[in-house]
Length: 225
Image (cartoon, rainbow, N blue to C red):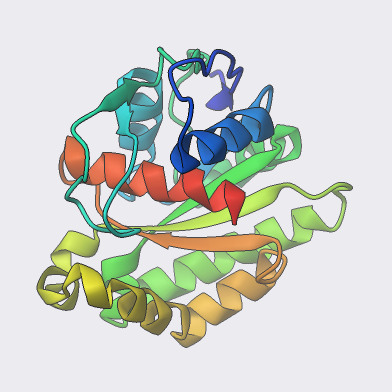
């Protein structure tokens, strides 16, 4: 079964000129050009959804807040308009038995997306905690043989199922993200993934296209931070 290795070959950015966002997008595109992306995570975290969105979806130019779903502009850019080419592939299994395939994928990747159910970690689900701990033990071990090391994003999905997320205003969303990062299991995950300098934590939802756009936008903008 082919592994879901996404090959990013980003080219034309002529549509984005004369703005701060244009400068950031230009940097993002240059940074990601030719990079290989691995999407990992247990079953039900949204891997297939994210891969399909990267292949066919669109992203907005700008959002009011990092994780706010409302856009300040209706102008959108199709990913294929940015010459983002996603290699056809099947979704890799989230079962622990697939760790061998995970390792193969990880070793080929320049950037790794590790997806986790943020709502379950927030709720203190011990089963989810145990699973992500096992996942990151493996990923941490694989990191030791990589030089240079891939950049890792821990992407917390399904935040729309957390009542606090739904009731948090965009002005307070930064506090919500900081609170999530302070959860002991998340602190451990970041440490195992190479530490805060090597690992970014992004939260959001993929409930619909707009939410998915917001999440992907966050991830791509982290390239410039």
